[in-house]
Image 1 (tube, rainbow, N blue to C red):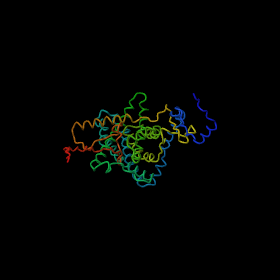
Image 2 (cartoon, rainbow, N blue to C red):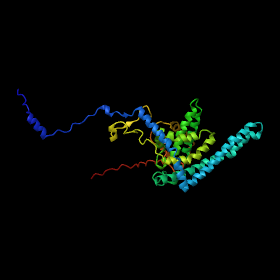
Image 3 (cartoon, helix red, strand yellow):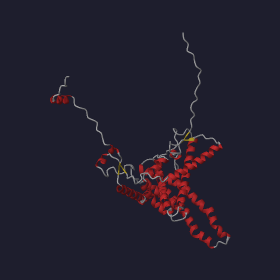
Image 4 (cartoon, helix red, strand yellow):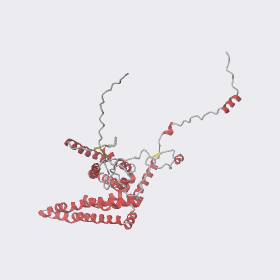
Length: 394
């Protein structure tokens, strides 16, 4: 049996030079595919820095004074808002400091017992309601003008277009649905804040913390509408930067927590235009919540190849508006069920985003509302039944 001929080293080297080998695939370790996290201390330092940034942005009264003194449109609307809300706030304090103690001192007389009720129904509630309604339109004009001065663009209207709404009737339904949904969201937020106040021991602190996020949301709502963010994206944007928005809403929440309910509402309406201007000039951080400090720890992170997630002990997204959205879903579902049982005409059907519920389908509208994207249901074309034809053969 013949043995294989040995290959000389020179021939082997020559063959190697004639046919250079291809690059062998480089295998990386499975450990390198694991996500990389920042330490708890580094994440905590980042959160503290974001909170400080929110407090600084919520304290830029110099920007408010500069815009009010330089721009005529902003100054006019801000002055009207200040005067009307000042009257409503003064009316509230007249009742709280004068009429209410007077009625308590002499409860035996019918007039003194009912003077508070007459004052509330005939004067206080109409004045506060009118001031809140008019303040919404004035704040919308202030937001539009501030956005134009800030970005050099006109405030965009993200609403019904010929591609989304076939006629003006659908556009009217869009604006009506958005206003109704926004009113429901405001009502559920206020109700939830009141409910948190009745929790034993921690109720007052929980109510204040929740109101910080609620105030911050409504301060930034105008700029989010201008940028075309849907309701689900707005809430996600806030919840992923929960520390910044908590700090931004902290000053307004602390200002509006020492009086009665009507006094706090009137006081918030009084300072609301100023915080809209501050929100238009704010810079929420971080820009990427899932990679907040890419150049903080490793040298490879500076090249953009590594993603440094925050510490798993600190949540990236805090679902602070989950109870509000849940209550909204229940209310909207109940209203749709009642409408369905009545058997009324339904020219349009609300189509929410898949897996996110009704709230995710809310799109922006003009002025005070965000548009609900309502798309008409198109019936499938009927299939034509054609008689079978016989093929003629010659």
